Length: 140
Image 1 (cartoon, rainbow, N blue to C red):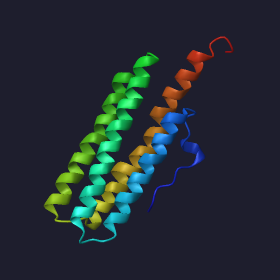
Image 2 (cartoon, rainbow, N blue to C red):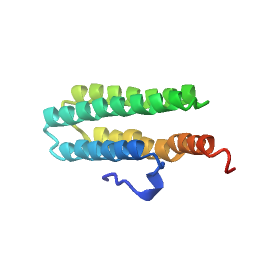
Image 3 (spheres, rainbow, N blue to C red):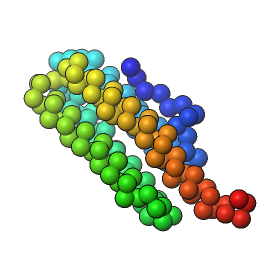
């Protein structure tokens, strides 16, 4: 159920990889807080931390992409918006259900953890590859 940062999530950018590790840690913190089903305030606090860190991370990624003139920036921002919307839905779900239910935990697992893994392995890796080719054009 918990997330684990593995080598297949490495992008080669130390800052981004470090932030991805922290995001995974925050997702796990949220899931741990959900183990106490009656602890709505604890889950809400962890969800807020996750939301804040996600926003910090997305801004860093988007700034890097602007800096390297990544041609897929607009699509990447749209993907980031998907997770932003999911986090908002989770806030609403937590309030409506008065605590972290099984459905809430399932949504965190599928729509946050799984989304992040897929996003890193596809979209973020694409940015890393573009940046590498850009920086090493003379070697290609």
